[in-house]
Amino acid sequence: MEKYIIDEKAGLKYELVGDYYFLAGDDEPEEYRPIGIWEQRHLRYLRQCKKTIYTALVIEGKLPGYLADVNEQAEETLFQLVKQMAKDEGVDEAVKRRDQLGYVQRMNSIRNRAEEVVLNEIIY
Image 1: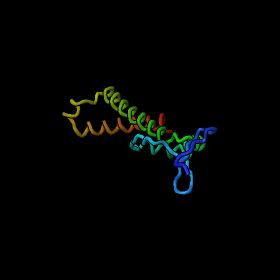
Image 2 (image 1 turned 180 degrees about the vertical axis):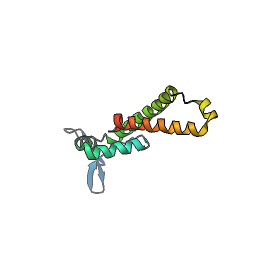
Image 3 (image 1 turned 60 degrees about the vertical axis):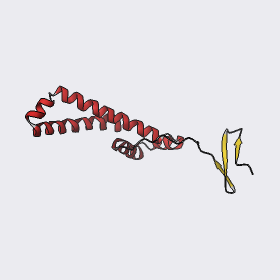
Image 4 (image 1 turned 135 degrees about the horizontal axis):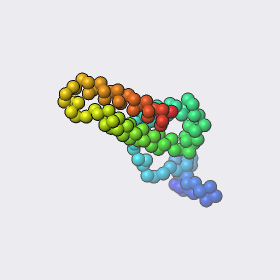
């Protein structure tokens, strides 16, 4: 029996494993992209509220890449929002030197507001 056979009509490649032919996967390893908090939240949202989109992405095999892109977009948006809000509110190194506790409180407030924006605009 041949190790590989190709179905010309369907354009599929099969590999002999033991006594059975299985659909041969890509030989190139997939690029590793870490799973982030935004990706996990968006996945939970898709599973609970957007089941048709979730199912379509799973069937097409595009779910991991899609979620990684959402995670990257959310992280970048969060970074830019925090940076811009801190600038707009005058929270800088001078404030940090003068009042460390006040600086931390203001930055936590800014980060929480930026996270809410990311959650409402990108994740949900």
